[in-house]
Length: 307
Image 1: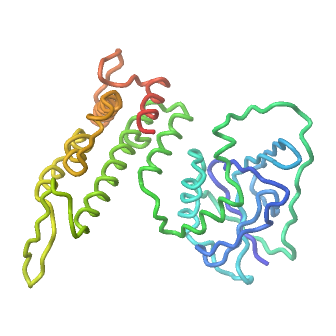
Image 2 (image 1 turned 90 degrees about the vertical axis):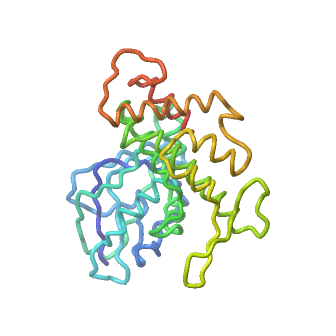
Image 3 (image 1 turned 30 degrees about the horizontal axis):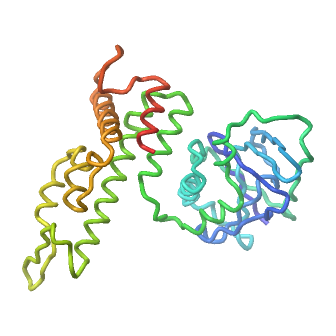
């Protein structure tokens, strides 16, 4: 059988139990089988795995390799969709630093599937890993869950944006955490737009929309009609962050963040102003009001607001 070993740019953290399956069939990748991280195929890649057994029932693994068994001795190349699968695995586990960059692929032919080599009980006490790192470690169950989502997962985009911001914080990239790539503010905006669009779509689909909105049925030519609310359209046309948190939800639902939690609203606006200053290349090294500091404290303040 043919096994492909994929070398990643960085480690993936795993929690593996003795009763975990040796492999998981990935329907989203056409039947390629994902090999248990403790069942390693031989490889020329210089990337040693780090095993940290916590008990006889759990081993924490740091590895920058994943192994895929080809279906039915297929000679096909590893599908490009493996990167999308890894992105979905990252979203499922919420492991912000889970690597999705494949640096190389090595193919080997073997007679038998490598057996799982589960280490014994630990010979040391305590753990240097924080709670977040343990709780977000990938498992064989999360591999199955990621596969079930397929290669077009219906996972809101703000989840991935928030993970990018968290990864930036983990790596002490404090400016990035509140800036463009690791965008706490972006996750807030994406969440607000997603929820408001869902609410608006529900109103349009209703046979009896709420009396406080203005849903009209208008002819659009060719004998077709369209339902829309011109007030909501007018409010949504401008790229105004504060409207996403106050005027638009107040119009659609008679509730708003400003009305119900003024402190959180103000924090969200501070996060918005910080991101805008950074995206326009404006420096503010000295402490300023109404923007977040570009240090660890400011980065985590932005994350707390987004969460």
